[in-house]
Image 1 (cartoon, rainbow, N blue to C red):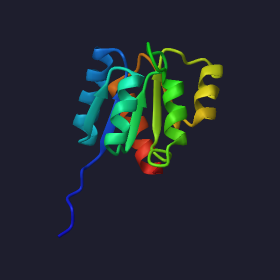
Image 2 (cartoon, rainbow, N blue to C red; image 1 turned 90 degrees about the vertical axis):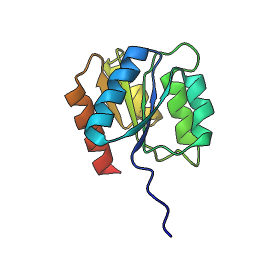
Image 3 (cartoon, rainbow, N blue to C red; image 1 turned 30 degrees about the horizontal axis):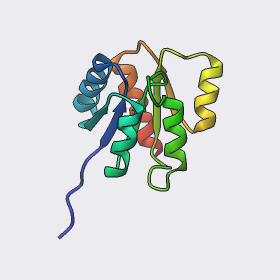
Image 4 (cartoon, rainbow, N blue to C red; image 1 turned 120 degrees about the horizontal axis):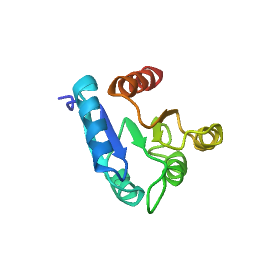
Amino acid sequence: MAEASAGFRVLVVDDSHAMRAFIRAALEEDHDAEVVEAESGFIALRLLPQDRFDLVVLDVNMPDINGLELIRFLRQSSVHRTVPVLVVSTEASAKDRERGVSLGADAFLRKPFTAAELVERVRELRERS
């Protein structure tokens, strides 16, 4: 008997509860995603070995392990190396984008953004992978 598909699983890493809730609502409604939340990079590092994710959405500025460090971990992991990463951040200068992309981010959204912008960017990432 074939195992049931777990669906589209997303790890959202942001220290803002409001931002995590906003992302969760948008993705659950439009992509029928199963969203797992982490309020810090440290918690994300504890969750990643326990599960598989189809997408990681993360903020750059977090208090313990920042988003750029988390991208570095993902890209060095044999399990998570190919998982698409969407960076959402208020830090959206060309230099910040270049740094994120050079570490392995697949896409970037500048805060604040709309649910429609998030959904469209996630749709693009899903089509690419």
